[in-house]
Each structure stands twice: as structure tokens, then as C-alpha cells.
Image (cartoon, rainbow, N blue to C red; front, top):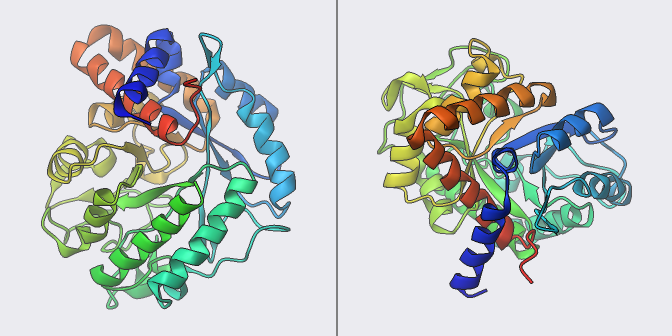
Length: 356
């Protein structure tokens, strides 16, 4: 698509949206992959939520998952009679992190195993896995893991190393293999997400289950940032922000709430123009000391675009807080508007907007 019509299409959608619809584009709500809860889906629909994550585990296979996903995608908001297509995401990394399995889905080995293959092999297999997601109606994979876990830490790294989620123990291997995974996925028409910026390789605690997880090693010039830098250069549409804190980058904030991490390091220094998505801000113990309202507002204020929560029940409190802050604060309102544009641009590139 030439640039002008693309920008025009995104602008038309943006202009046609109510404030509630715009804010809804900045959220991704989690629902069970096997049996989505109808009341949760209704909450997401009522809040105009534009993206959904399939969570838990489902062994139903591609055809059965497709039926479920088609039902979810049917509740996408309409803007001027046109659908603002739904992003449907899941965690399909491999090993112990593979939400969807069953007929039509390959069993994916863990990251360390994938990292032992040639990049050409990984790219081919990633294209196959992505085609399976596509067949199930999923258009965004919350992978690849771009975290570098040093060999000396290994399984002592609870979020990544313990589950062998990393492609390897050096920036070189993680850069080449996260790149191959993303390239194979793109070939099959599935978007990917580099995670967990600026890296969870140097921590011991898991932010899902632990508060006050601190990385006291990573700086803005660490070699472990190479996989993110390379993936961004290659055009990664999404980057997921970690909920750990990084004492040598910004000791005062969790990364997800840090303008230094998101706005300065990711956007300004690395030139990332895509969608910055949070790690889970619903159930993660790392964010429990913040109200749901604070989590949403602080993430967007820091430069984040899409709030991920695996607890749809808190979305109304979050969207209300964002709208209230927009009404009081022009600079925050401008951030929201920029974020909505970035989300709509990603949707446009993925063919989810009707620009006929």
C-alpha cells in the first residue's frame, strides 16, 4: 500500500471513533483459549477492547480454535460501518509455553532447542508454526523471547532460564534466532512481539509471581539489548515491556511505568515506531501494589501503547481512569492519540482494517 492511503485509512478510522472506542484500542484482554467465558467477552465488548489474548491451555486443535476465534473476532467494534478488526494473540513460543495444541498444531520444542538449529531451519519451522496459528485465526504471537540468560545464571533465572525459554546464552545466538523466528512468522502473515524489554535474562525472580524483581546489571549500552535492537531494525511490529525494574537505567520505576525505558530507550534511542505492549498488568504480582487504574495510566504515560491484562474484570476501571486522565491532561491525551494511531497502523499492516 502506498503510504498516503495507509495514513488516510488510519486517520479515517481514528476520526470516526468515539473516545471510548479509541481507548478500547489500547487494551488486550485475556480469555481462556479452550472455553472463553461469555461474561468476560461481554466486558471486553462493552469496553470496546480491540485485542484479545487466548490464555491457559487448549488441545482442541486448529479447526475448533478457529470457531472460537471467529466468534471473538465478530465482536470487533464497527467504525462508520466498517470493522476495526480484532488482534487475536496467544503465547506460542514452544516447550512449556505453548497455549494451543492438538490436531493441526505441531508440538514446538523449547527455545534452547530451537536455538541449537540453524537459522534457516528455525525460520522454516517458525513459518510452519505461524501458518498453524493463522489457520486458527490467531494473527499475533507474543513471541519470540529476546532475553539473553547468561550461562552462569541458567535455570536460576526463574522467568526464562528455568523453563528453557531462551534461544541461547549469548547476544549473538539470541539475536540471530529471535530474528529467524520473527522472519518465519512474518512470512506466514502472523505478527510477532519481541519480549521482555529491556530483558529479563539477568533477574532471578519471576514478575508473574514475585514483587520487587530487580535487574542490577543491565545498562542502556548492554550487549544483551542487541536482540531487541536488531529485531526493531527488522521491523518488529510489537515489543513487550517487562515489569521488572532496572536499577542502572531507572531505579525509581518498574520498566512498564518508566518513561526512561519506554520513551527514551525504546522509542528515542532505538527508534521503535511500533506498538509497545505491557506484560500482564492484571494478575502479575509485580504490579499488585498499584491499583488497576494506576497501572493503565502509568503505562500509557510512560509511552506504552497497549495494556495487556489477563483479568478482563479490571478493564472497566482501567479504561475509566484513562478517559478521566485524558479529560484533565492535554499531554496525556496526546499520548493516547499517538498510541491509538500506532495500534491502528499495526492493524492496517496486518490487513485488519477495511480500507477499500
